[in-house]
Amino acid sequence: MAEMYPWFKALHIISVISWMAGLLYLPRLFINHTQVAVGSEASEMLKGMERRLMKIIMRPASVATFIFGGALLSMPGVVDWSMGWIWLKLAFVLGLGATHGMMEKWQKDFANDRNARPAKFFRIMNEVPTLLMIFIVLLVVAKPF
Image (cartoon, rainbow, N blue to C red; front, top):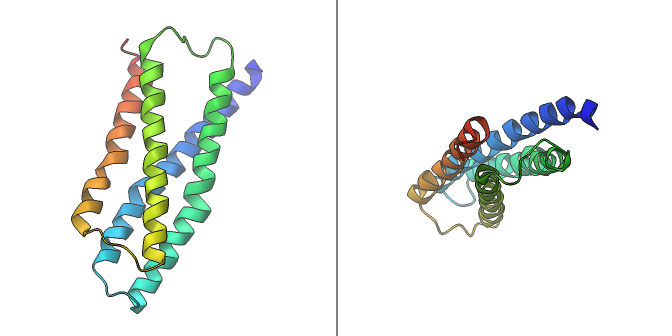
């Protein structure tokens, strides 16, 4: 299993980067979507972009992130489970998963012309994955406690 570690780590990083790209871009599409008329050509174009981003990039990348991250966590000696940083990191990762779940719902709301949230809401939500990512990277690199 040790010979697989660098491969799993590389695939985990690639998956995380892909997932984060979607988590950072989709709220920007939502912001644009709030500013166009329901049923307009622009609205329909944004629906397609949002659907493809979720289906082709975000869902597969999130699944791959959890699979390869789980594989790394299961390798003996990779994580010292007595350290607090890993537990906080995992909590933040669950936060990314919850954020993804909310974006799934919002994407469906836009697809069904039922969005009731203003652009400002999505501007604020656009910062959530960024903050979670910063905390996760700092914890993984610095292992402060």
